[in-house]
Image 1 (tube, helix red, strand yellow):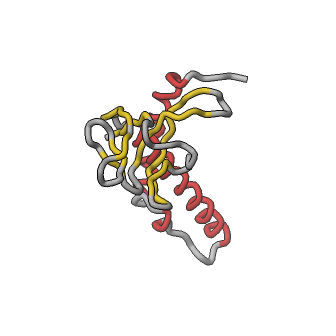
Image 2 (image 1 turned 120 degrees about the horizontal axis):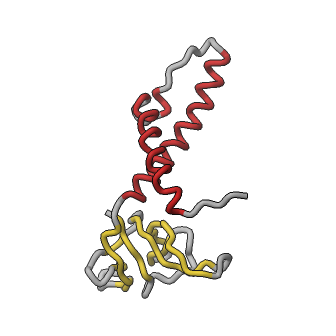
Length: 144
């Protein structure tokens, strides 16, 4: 089995992003723009498969674009007087705000950065996908 360090993957993945963008540009970044002959069973099959692939490529492109953004702030969250969580610099978060949080991963038994978003339920905000993580005192970062 061959392993690759993340630094080995950085360049080829971002080069791949440009090729993905070229493919997505052909359909204006929407699988709805794939033309095919509805009377040709192979065209119908390929259109269905290409729609699925285009959707995944679009997600890969979005993820790589996100990773290319510089980290603009690292801070600790606290609840402000309006009930929102903010960093020491006053950057606050509401439902849907993208955020990276430094949380403990019990499976890996280590702390790691995770990409998530802030969401709201039962009168308070929480880290989407990590309901058990308390926002107050949480180390976070933002990309911009």
